[in-house]
Length: 73
Image (cartoon, rainbow, N blue to C red; front, side, top):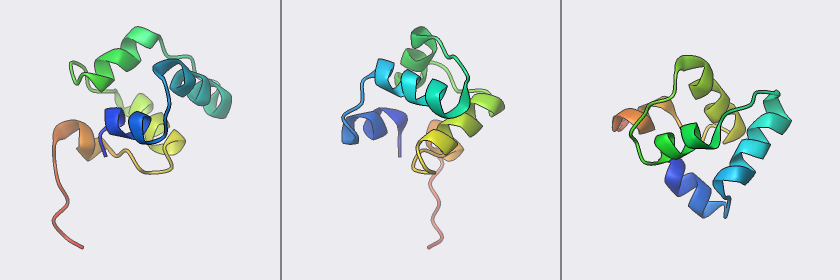
């Protein structure tokens, strides 16, 4: 699931998502960085990607940022 869709489905603003990351991991991420991830102008680095996967309970995966679909079920 794309990060933008995850935020929309969970009725989260960018700031609430940032607060969730900080609360769950202690890591601070600038709002401008989150905005770039959402608009797909930047792909998170490995450390950031792992945080996203953790905070979204595996709903947003690295492949979602690359447009790779898992065809196996």
